[in-house]
Amino acid sequence: MNDSTNDPLLDYRALRAEDPDVYGLIAREAERQKNGLELIASENYASPAVMQAMASVLTNKYSEGYPGKRYYGGNEVIDDVESLAVARARKLFGAEHVNVQPLSGSPANLAVYMALLQPGDKVLGFSLDQGGHLSHGHPLNFSGKLYTIIPYFVNKESELIDMDEVEAIAVREKPKMILAGFSAYSRSLDWRRFRAIADKVGAFLFADIAHIAGLVAGKQLENPVPICDVVSTTTHKTLRGPRGAIIMCKEKFASAIDRAVFPGVQGGPHDHITAAKAVAFGEALRPEFRTYAAQVIRNAAALAAALGERGYRVVSGGTENHLMLVDVFGSKQITGKEAEKALEQAGISINKNMIPFDTRKPLDPSGIRLGTAAIATRGCRETDMAAVAGFIDEALMERLDAARLAAIREKVAAFAGSFPVPGIG
Ligand SMILES: *Cc1c(COP(=O)(O)O)cnc(C)c1O
Image 1 (cartoon, helix red, strand yellow):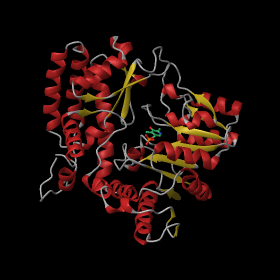
Image 2: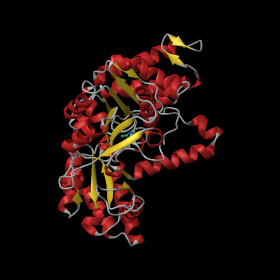
Image 3: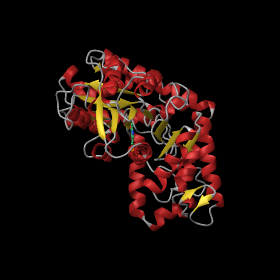
Image 4: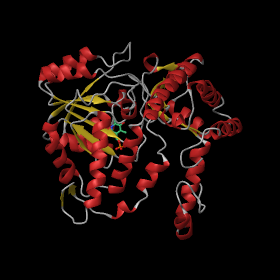
């Protein structure tokens, strides 16, 4: 980590002098990020500009409320920061209304449920063990505790979401809201069909694009914002901004959404993060971001193909976005937990994941989930994916040999070292 006086990026001198413990931990994490291959599908590298906005005096301010309607004085600059973030997000996604205050994806979703539903109302959501998110109805999450969640599934043969079944369930259950979105599904969603089904049964249509927002912003996937009533997204995954979230909606839901965020769920917004969101939206509005989003998808397709050539079964046969599920147990009799551990020892970060209709348990499932958003930010291209698949395969084959895994880790570090991490080098 660079901390010299002419540091073009972040200046860490004060932190190092005052708190060498925390400085040391951050430096260690920077090394880890630099030497490893980051294939966790929900992760990315924020730019130095995004990080500098986060590390700013804006963190000092309280600004409960919205621009022009605050409960504290001294918000004339913060009002401009928030208005800028809103204007850029509206332009990026073609949204009628945007709330940029949600602290993260889960609280954003809590606000959406609060705005549109009463406790106990029925929600149709993608089954969690097939790719949905905790906030789409996990029994220990607010969503599963407060609302009646009816799951929909993928087709057992195609492993694609079965839209005819979604329609049949919606007609039978008459949900108040249909939730379309995922954390582990490698295919595009049919937003228009979801809209038609929601209209047929009189349900709100809520899209959670936490994973794919950057691919939508980069114009590589269809934008659900004009089609859905409400759309939430995190800002730190493919969108490559600070850790946080936003909610977009049609004008008629604007005041309900705003009231649900504040005072419904949150107190003061994190204004330094709002500024960093504005920076990230500014970056995503540039033509280079389209190139980036296209590269992410090409890398994912190439990685899925390269793993397929090595005998790994990719769920649904491939990917149309940045992520894929690989059935390591079905292909190679390696459990997801074993695979995660071996790859970690080899310097490759992924996560174990259930595959659809998994016969194994969540803590040691049949699959792993991989994504290419982070490595594309480092400059990896589709031609690099054969090497990445090679490292993965080698580590999985040598999973019981700690010395071999350590040797692979060296090779991975050398490979990763040729692709700079923003802000670290
Ligand atoms: C990551 C994710 C979230 C939640 O994000 P946090 O910021 O971790 O709370 C919500 N929905 C989906 C679909 C996600 O993938």
